[in-house]
Image (tube, rainbow, N blue to C red):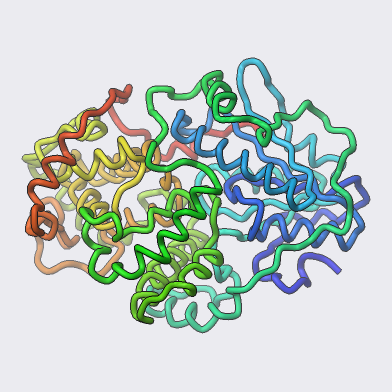
Length: 488
C-alpha cells in the first residue's frame, strides 16, 4: 500500500519517481501548513509511516533571507511553529525546527534530513517560495517525495481540470463538499523518532514569548516592520476566533460583511488560513455549530470555499500565480492602450506604503495593511482598483499591488490574494464604456464606504492613524520569487 492508494489520494501527488526505501523515518516537511491537528500533510506522513512501521519526523525551518522577511512575518511564523511543536508532542510525533541566523547556519538541511528518510512528505502550495522549493528538492534528492494539499477542503485534483468560470467551479465544488468535510487525525502506531539528526535542532515548543522575540531579534530581517498586535500567532487565538465566528460574525454576517466599520462583519481568519494554523474543515465545523439561518451559513461558506478554493484551483494551472501575465489578455491590452494617458493622482511608492497619498479613503485602507497586517475585504477592492491610477503604468501598478500585499499583509503571498488582485486588474467581465486610464476594466468608487452612517468620520480616523517609517525602494520589485533562489 502507498499514499497513491489511500482514501485521501486526490490530495497527494508524487513529485518524483524515486522509490520508497528503507530508512529510519518518514520525513514530513512543513512550510506553510503550520498546524499539528487537522493537517493532511502530517496525516499522510503518519499513514505512510504506520504502513511501513516507521516513525515520522516533522521538520519546519525558517530562513532569514526569503523575500520581505520581517519581524511581522517571522514572529507570526515562529509563533505558529511553536504551537506545531507542542501539538506534535500531544500526538506522539517528533518535531524538530531550525531558525536561520548568524549564530547558527546550516547548509542543505532539508537534503540532509531527507537523505536517510524512507520518503519525504511535504505540502502542495502553488505560490510563494514553497512551490519551487518543493520541486527543486524533489528533482535533486534520491528520496521519494510526495506533495499533499492541506489548504483546501476539496483538493483541486478531485475536481475536473480546465473549469473556466467561478460559477462552473462552484457547481462542481458544491457537489463534493460533504464528502470531504470529515476527518480523523491519524494516530501513529510507532514511538516518536529519537535517533540521530544531522544538526542540533531549535526547540521552539519550549520557548516563552521573551525567548521567541529574542530569537527573532537575532535574525537579519526587517525589524522596522513591527508584528501586528491584532493577530497573535497562537493556536489559542485561532480557537477564540472560531468561537467568535460562530457566535458573533455569522449572526450578523449578511448585514455587516461589506461594512469595514463593523468588526463583526469579518472573521479575520485569513492570516491563520495563509499560515495554515487553521484549515477549512475546522472552519466549516464551527459554521455548522452556529445558530443562524441557512442563508447566513451558506454565504460565508461561499466566500470560504467557492472563492478561496477557486483561486487555489486557478493558481495550480499558472506557472507563476503572482505574475501580471495571469491577468486576461483583453484586460492587459486595454490597460496598456491607456498607459500613456496622464495620471492626475500619481503617487510615489513611499507615499503609498505609508498611506500618505491625496486619497483619504485609500489611506484608510492602506493603514490597515501597514499597521494591522490585514485589510477588510471590501476595502481591498477599492484599494487595488485605485492603484491602477496611482502608478505610472499597469505593469508598475501590478508590481506595486503585489509589493504592498506581500510585504505588509499577513495573508499576502497567497493564491487568494493574488486572485483578488487579478480581479481588480480585470480578471472578470469587462466594465461598461471605455474610461481614461482603465479602458474597459471596471472602476470602483469609495461611495459605498463614505455614504454609510458616520462613514466620513470613520475614514478620517482610519486614515490619520499614526504609524512608523519603513525603508522603501524607488520602484517595487518585479517577481521577487523568480529572482530569489534561496538555499534549501
